[in-house]
Image (cartoon, rainbow, N blue to C red):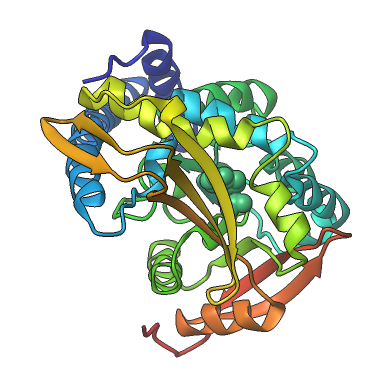
Length: 367
Ligand code: TRP
């Protein structure tokens, strides 16, 4: 089991106490401390459960993914500490336009987005990483009371939360370490508050279609009826621009992809040689998506988690999909999950979109 750095624990404890003190200022000092301790215990239990669960399911997912006829691995395992760092580096490359276009768009429309955020609302972000784009919203919407960043990487979350706590002392910050595709609860800081979800970065495109609908449905449930959801989506565009974005000329995306093998070696006792695989980014027009693969450079046998896997030369391990939408195809997807598009904004080229979704009244979500 990976050791949890003491800084991460301190950051979490500090945040939890701050949240309880903020939200329960009416209680006596003794009761405040009691509540803080209760939260800490439940937080520690959740955290331990997430760690154990992540390791067990990593092994199980890896074994079943590498035993399949078409080898594949779930992309959530990209995001260990190194993977999260490499991903932030991808976002800063010239070739990966999604972050640049979306950040410029957010900067332009921050006031408009903020106008749709109610007084005292909680902003809930799915897959918050270093929360860089979020600052544009936080700056434009001082009426926000709480910020709930959700991320699978405890390291990324704790670093981001500590910096945000410093820069936004008015805001209660309640980080949740979780796989947001699974079940989780919003922390007490979001109780009784109007909620606005934030899901930028075209992460929705990393689900398959049904997975995206299921995520949007569960977001609707978690966020409640008075919610809104701001979703950033990448739009279909010319293949050259797309291919460069997922195979950048500095090779950061290739390193990010191969880091998955290094993580298997470290956490699951594997003996992958990352240099024996090539990074491959492909446009799949049938599914309207970019695909990431690792391609075996030779016939080889690899061991991990007590299992043996054989790769033929040229055989692919499928590691990620990034679906690209049109305005209409995204609106249809959202409607299947019971959300309607209340507003759409489009960036300059290379174009990405930001949608404001609202629950379709009286319409239950169906797959
Ligand atoms: N949400 C990002 C996207 O689909 C994730 C991403 C960017 C990614 N580059 C990647 C995932 C490379 C895997 C490999 O654009």
